[in-house]
Length: 316
Image 1: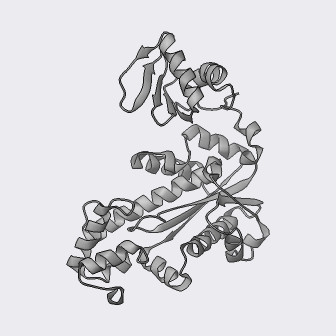
Image 2 (image 1 turned 180 degrees about the vertical axis):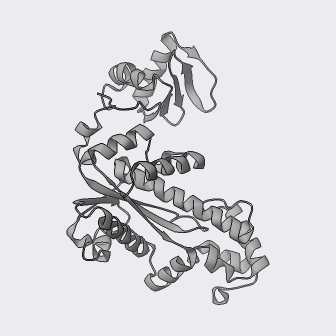
Image 3 (image 1 turned 30 degrees about the horizontal axis):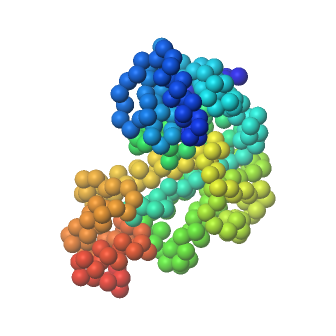
């Protein structure tokens, strides 16, 4: 039931009982045990490798990954056939709709990016073939950037990206005084912008980040005609997954631009002690007003950075 190009890497989260069954299976069959850090067991088969991590995640990689999942993992370990049956298990995922997701919300440095992607049955096949999935499960920035490039090439006219640069973000937050309101505005703009390209899209789906009415309230004339759905863990939907990848890639490119513009070697993501140190050094060199151009100034870290340099928010 698997159509199109085969995907050579799959990650599946197993229950405790399923992990025990897999360990027993891999230990008793003709697999070559290999040493992989942080695994409970790791083996090499003829056409794939199977790593069961301590977290319960099972990574299957290689040209025979899909066959091993279909003929071994599903019937003998999980007892559930899912691979290749996504359209049956979640029929809405292949119906025409758009997905929306954001990146940069929890990062001190860099823009807030919201992306929207339109999918139908054909484009879901394309996304599956190129290996698109939730960007939060993609550990490598390089892979995220490559996937985003593939999505843009394969889905021309079926996506929109809204980027709130730092100065615009800080102005908007200063007016709205609430991150979720800013997010709702960005989601609404991403929906409206994509509807200009795909005006007959009937439905939009996003992760749930606040009261459902906020996005609906922010929508304009075209957007108010669309069915707006929000749910937790919406990234499992292929349209939302693709949007999360495009948003992450645009956010990463925004960080690289900040590094170039302000002569910073590497700006880490998030809001760690290293991020705080870089911001503190930046203020020491260029003055407090530089934060409005580089950081989300409502973060508590911003106040700590200012205080470390003898400033207050009044100096921004």
